[in-house]
Image (tube, rainbow, N blue to C red):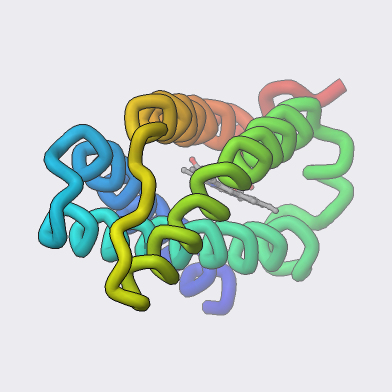
Length: 149
Ligand code: HEM
């Protein structure tokens, strides 16, 4: 039962994460007026929530003794590929995360943040999106025992 619930939450993170990172990208391309900023921050909040949900449910699935057992994953090359790709997303996310926190603070003070890097942030955003899609394929092969020595 725990396995089914945690598995459902892991999939829900994908249902939450993919649209939110896509919409965050769209907001970055659209006009960054007050309404555009509001959309950007809403998508960014959901993207952050999805990342947290992925990490907590993923760790539970891998090491909580509710799936195939930690040994299965620790000895799977595809598990480590997946972890590396996830880590790359987290590293790529540092710049947007810090930037959007600054933008939120500026807007909260009634100021207008410098959005001149929006185009570069859009590119980083879409690399993250592509990596999520790639992870789904890696995860599906991993779950079926591919990539084990
Ligand atoms: C972008 C982040 C992630 C995505 C898109 C993702 C996607 C998926 C998908 C689609 C599955 C189902 C595979 C299947 O049964 O066909 C899955 C399973 C799984 N994921 Fe993730 N995941 C992510 C992050 C993580 C993280 C951070 C961890 C661990 C720390 C993790 C650990 C697992 C485990 C243990 C399974 C179960 C595999 C099995 O059934 O044996 N995932 N993931």
